[in-house]
Image (cartoon, rainbow, N blue to C red; front, top):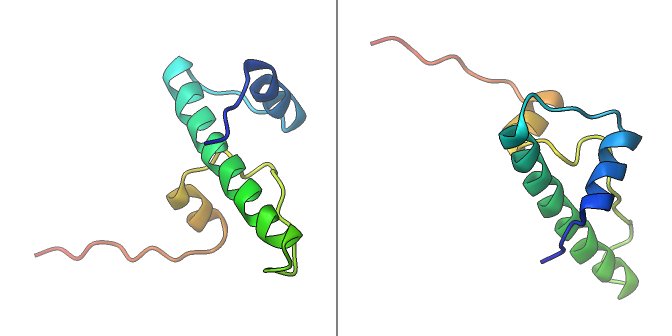
Length: 83
């Protein structure tokens, strides 16, 4: 797994102007960023091996949960039905 150094995490937050409400959220977001970084690295190895035709990179969305990312990218949520 790709580890994220304190310096790398601080640089990410600074570059994308990120701030979190408390230490717990900061740690959760850091974990999401770490997962994103691992996904990017695995994908880019495939790119280098000619298995895919495009590269991935870390961006301002790299600290979002899957649900937050889906919502931000237009996923429609169906409200629960009452019984």
